[in-house]
Image (cartoon, rainbow, N blue to C red; front, side):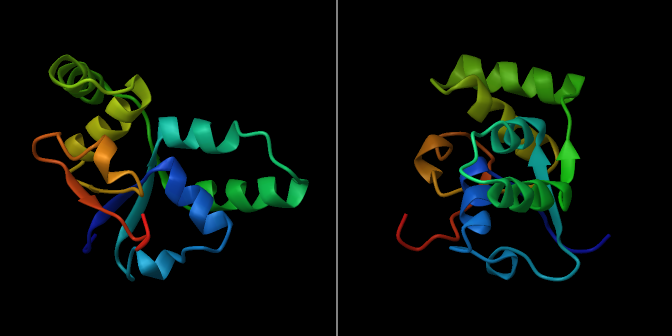
Length: 127
């Protein structure tokens, strides 16, 4: 596969579902879109205002590859948590990006920018 691998943070799934962002704002043909298992659970575990909203988010999530927890991601998460004051969910998302050499797409750059070696982009200009 050619192209980059992008891991979408939960806030990006929300912006995509609200049409405040388009997939083309993030990736091009040949790129891979992924979700950490945490983002998948956070996105689909939300109390939706309508069945339509739930269908949209479900469709978005199912169009991405899901990165499950592995021993390597677990070990990287532990290392990130020991080094930085960061929520467990964010540490798992960051570790998933690091282990998979992926770019983390998030509107919350501040939550991740202190992590050595992580590649981040924020496609939301006002955030």
